[in-house]
Length: 271
Image 1 (cartoon, helix red, strand yellow):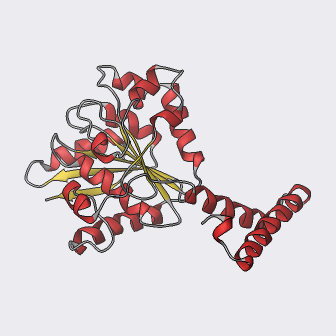
Image 2 (cartoon, rainbow, N blue to C red; image 1 turned 90 degrees about the horizontal axis):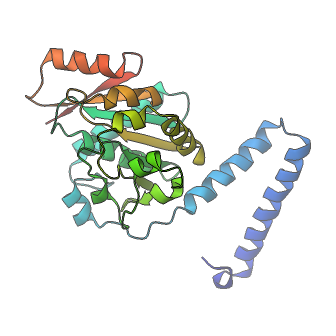
């Protein structure tokens, strides 16, 4: 809302809030260890950052159904609650809200992208959090279906070309508080790119840009590629998608070994 559309009380309230924050900032300089002041300033900044995440287009319910994206109020409550349960368990296992989760299917066509994007969308349901979906599968990219702006650069261009800034590869989705990094052009050297210092710096930067951001890395299938094994080094939790009737117990165990038992956090069964 613009200031000229606000009444005198609203304007006064806004000015008082700004003055209060400015005073806290001043006090913070002299008393940097005061936890109450630090928390108040931090919470204010987080709220302002989240409010500034403008989304040019919000998908309608019909579009969300068409794209198979979960949302509050959807008819398939069981599916929505299943993703919420995954969110709860990941947060319980985490030391903070600033979490990186890797999602990979055991096999080709196992629904890894469906699970990865919807997990990100589940975290974005919380108005106090943001989510970032990173398409790390240049061999079978789906991210452009989730963006509402033309894609010019993606992850592979960023990792190859040091002149491409991070902000040029982050795009809005049609879901509030959810951003997308597309994979970019296909590359035969994705494994080498993902195992680079620039990839390590990228993960660090997107984690710190928003303090309450949940990041989902959508990795290629673990059975047919090596990328999931490489990407697992950057995640806090690794989730494996098991397509119904297409895998064996030995396939699952091999997938767990691929991402590392210390990072493995659970299975998502896709029917």
